[in-house]
Length: 342
Image 1: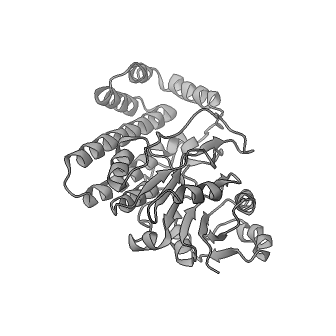
Image 2: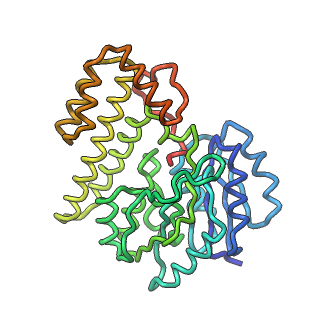
Image 3: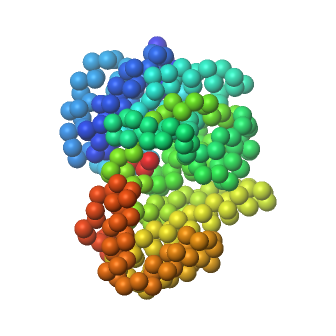
């Protein structure tokens, strides 16, 4: 029997939490699902942690011989999916028990196959909400692909639990395997360009876990994240047919990404005590977006290297982050693709 939903979970280095993600699927009030866990050559005992769940015929494990990255792992999962819709769940995140029920109810309001996303609720490592009143993204109205496309480019993007018709995911070519970050946005844009109806769930039924190892909790990965997102936006720009509104929205998004890259480079310079680089990036931020915050960063860049490093360490302590003892890899190489891009 063909299930309605195929939930694809790409996994790498998350053996300690993947069982919780699977458990949240097992707890769904809507039982009409298939679960495909893709072990992307995980260096830990992830496969052994998943094995006890395989007694449920709805759960499958696909093991890759080499670490190919989150985009490739998702594409493998799409290939193994049998459901009418594919749902994407990160291996360290959770679904609320009524997630699939809410997706099904939402799809019933759409004329034909549609795309559904969820604004995530951020939770800590124990699953407790970090800020129940905070929403990571602005909710768009029920819309067609063109309106949603402009929304994606104008607003901060953070939708999770993407539910897309399997045939549509396949027809647009799946995820771009050359991208290790920003691949979800680039995928959404290609789907939106087909004109498919788009909906966003009213409730935050996708739980986005903030872990110490998450990329977004590491200041020294901000530059790599920004450069990866910039690569995704470059691909998007090549796909967009001529449209003043689309181009204007894309330019605004690129400006935000470039600001993020400059911010990451500034933090890296402060952490390593490189006053010249810190001044250069602070000046770039001031010129791009004048603000009191950026002016304060310029002032900080005038301090001695030792004081800058102490301020950086104090900031990490204030944010509850572990200390960083060594400077980032000076080789300039990109990190290995990660599945934890929350």
